[in-house]
Length: 533
Image (cartoon, rainbow, N blue to C red; front, side, top):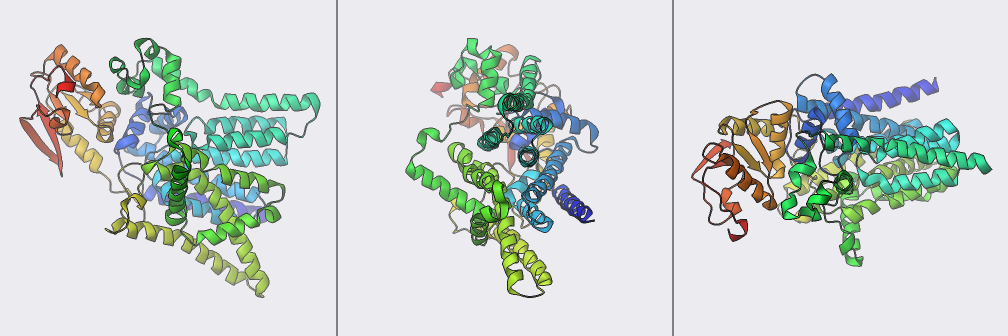
């Protein structure tokens, strides 16, 4: 009967958050990376780094079986894996020996955090990453309790799958693999066999990366490598020879070499600033300042409450911010802080357990009061950080660089996060496609061109147009188009003022398509030398 109650509580957590995330989910295509992820998941291809092969393959399956708007189908996948993450986080906390009510508290705390909540109501890779890690952590704890060859295989595969999505958990995955290798109890040859099986299973979990090699060779219309890298400009250090090497192409994609990492500029001052930013996001916008004493209470009671597993949880907590400190800055900080946010939820649930336990020992017949205290803790740790985010976002005096901003637009402006009425990208995209001349090239920056990737490739709108995600090194592509077709019959349509290409260029015609959004028509010959503009 007790086991049934635990299952019902876990199912309740799953169903509640699935309903919450679906209620607030974006109804259709979105701007930025979300639009590209929706398009590639539905049609196949390669996304921006790290390629996210598992997300793309699962998204393609979801796109085929879920009804409704095609873009929303992929957002539903994000919501579903967000809710499943909380189920396995619930299982992790239970595996650590805490009562079910505190497992539900920890899962709910993480589910209500702003960054995870936002990731679950839009098309993003982060909920899938958190799902695989929480699954891998639960399987690791289970394997440590009951070592067996089958458990090692399943755990190794799951830890490999964590790294086929986002790499934010890579250091924590390596830590868990080391824990499994060190604590392998089998002696002699059997130990070597188990170690070999674990490592082989881990490598097997990485196999989805083979999809990238297939997709890169299949000449699919959406290939981030092809539409981003301009070899003639020696972009990202590519030469014609290296660009034709599939291994160098995929290595560049997976290792995210497009971005400037923080490692080269890391010093004590920079490190202190990074830690400060993470502290503000974690204990200002995620759990609020009241979480700090509970976190301290949880940390000091790790050894007494968790037995032999306390070092694993403490180790994960301590190393969880490292990847973000090394590689994230600006708007990327909140999402790269998710590993720390997840570990904090586990420790906060332990701190809440210890607090209510002390409360129960101090007062007789304190059962009802303990439950009330839990509700108060949940309310305080959820409402206060959202109130802080909401009011600092509205304030004109709060420092802008300390305000909460998700990685990409739209940003949440309501107290309860929701994108359920976010139709703007679809309306804008369809308006532009309606106005674009026949056989034109639409040129836009990444934040908006991805909407047209989705509408053009996934929904088949305007098959006559060509799309160009513009960077200044892509100017040569515009010249190629101009020479091949002529701009009188195949004009350029810019989604940004054409004057940004050069001071000597001017536009003869523009059109307001939606709100404050204009498109700019250009059917004169472009100068052959961009650098002289």
